[in-house]
Length: 436
Image (cartoon, rainbow, N blue to C red; front, side):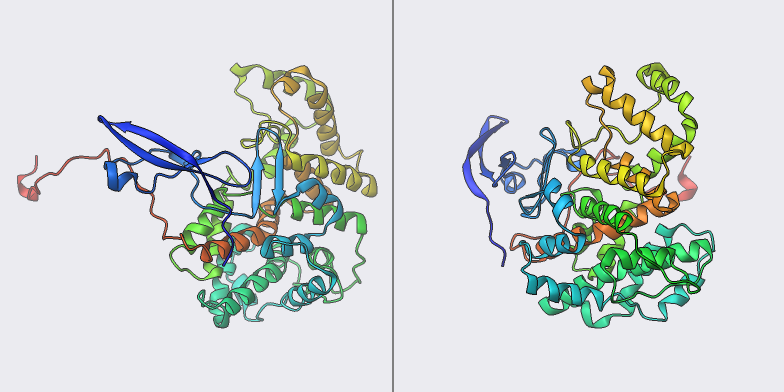
């Protein structure tokens, strides 16, 4: 059972229709205090109203902490900058799942388990042949990941901690294989099976860009960049897709169904498609000589043009993930000699202006992770249709960690938000022949 860090922090009083209601206030280890309203409906016969739940804590969690005003993102207390510079994605997976960085022996065992779960059932290949050749990779992932429950019956009992562990490792291991298969199917090339001697990220790149006719040689600069992208996207507190996974899991659904639900939510353009939108904006600008004019239109509110990949809904300051991603983006461009690529030259010029222009500095419209990850993924050779699938691959470990935490929470209940009903009051049924 996980240890709760919630502690009492006083009381708040709500006066409603002349009656005072005392509401407990609790504090976590970081962040704002919370008012406990669980008994409010029973005692006062009223609900709270919070569309999007932006002012509501739906759970207690000790996985990820965000302070949007200060630009802070931590996994289990470790800053995202430290993890991006010093850790690996697989080590970060261990941290998110188990709460601590692994010892050498713990990591060796974890790496072995993940590596030896990367194969998928051969009959899954027939699933891909049922899709149109031009099917979106996310459409394929939604279906195939949900179908894993039909192949791995021995790890769907959520009441068994051993089965939960096996399912967790299987999902982290198999998502790269399935995402690579979706990519290969999309481009009409044969599937490439995983190779156990390679690292997690090298293996994925080989499954995407290797071909049976040639030996694939990993490039450490490219692997480091993609591994960093995976680390930076691994978890992000109670976002839409994570909340979807928790909501699905609250019903007792199996882990494969819960992760498929998260993938479906992530596919929404308001959530997982931001780096794809940023790249489309660069394509719309077209050439470097048009950047200044585009920036001018962005400043003119009457134009209604948004600068994609700049600023962030959560981070009111600089996106803490962007600095690490900026370093990797330029490393990839240098390694591949792509600074003369027309689209990437547009991105570099737009970045230069945004970091120097007083308008963007004053409004804190700094380049965010989506801006740099979009550039990097394009340079690595991924089509924009794969961007969200790569996001899903990385975020799977965060979803699993949150799902496991939810199942171990003694206060966990099936999700059941309330509503303000604004429809008709009770009406009498009128027979069809009597209706006007």
